[in-house]
Amino acid sequence: MNLKSIKSSTYGLIAAGLVILLSGTYTDNGGFQLAGGMLIFISLLIALRQAGGNDSSG
Image (cartoon, rainbow, N blue to C red; front, side):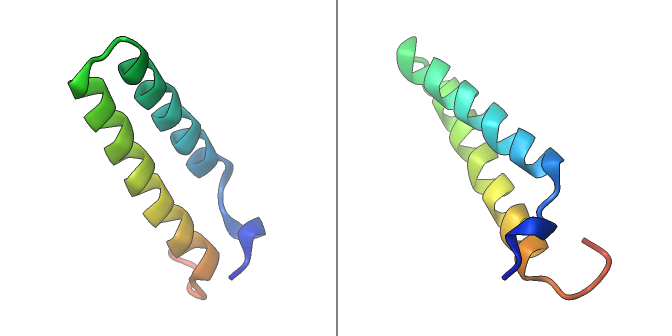
């Protein structure tokens, strides 16, 4: 697992998901909480694929 192979856009997606999740939590908006959580989850899956993959397609 090579964390240096994770692209900066993936880190940006994680940060954006965190901002959406926190703003949804602050305003008690369930839709924003769901969207932020889903974005973080999908971004973490992408990051794991980029860090663990040996192929050049990622």
